[in-house]
Image (cartoon, rainbow, N blue to C red; front, side, top):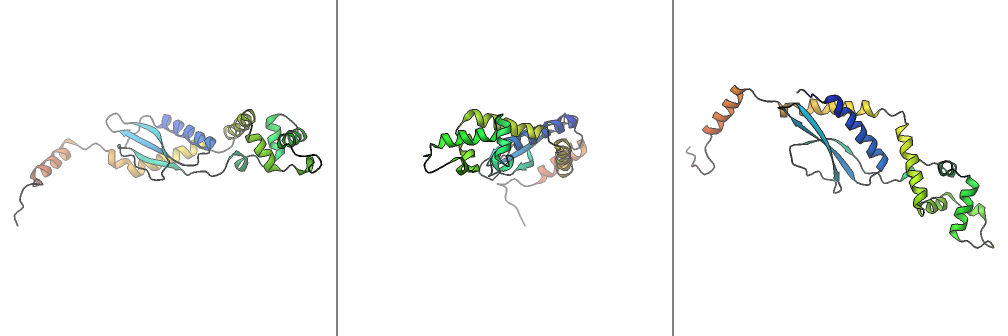
Length: 195
């Protein structure tokens, strides 16, 4: 099986993998591979597999499945309030004070030391501008990471070629003629078969 656009597909698959890591989806996502044996060109697509059972039946094969993530950017990346404050370009003290005011706590019963990380996360989640900055910071960390997305994409594609290559091989004229002859010799479904 020859794949003329192999390099382009490796690059595209690496981009898909980055995208899936950035989005932190809470459902499965399948990467589908299509191949045209006449042009020897492959194509990729994604399928949001929210049911957990891939039912696509269009000649494609699933070459990668991103399992659902049940975490968010705070569990995956932001380890503490210092990291959050750095991305928001404010001090941790400012972040704590903002959270304290947002809570509307009575000063007679609460002080700044009562603000916990969970309070800060809830406060950030209440502000779209902060969440946009934090999501951008998380995505930037993926773009700048040492993870070898291209190497992973190459391995996935190579495995798919080995596993599924035979299904797309173009048969010779003699092989096709033999298959046609065998089909014509076989009794029709409605024909009575004598024993």
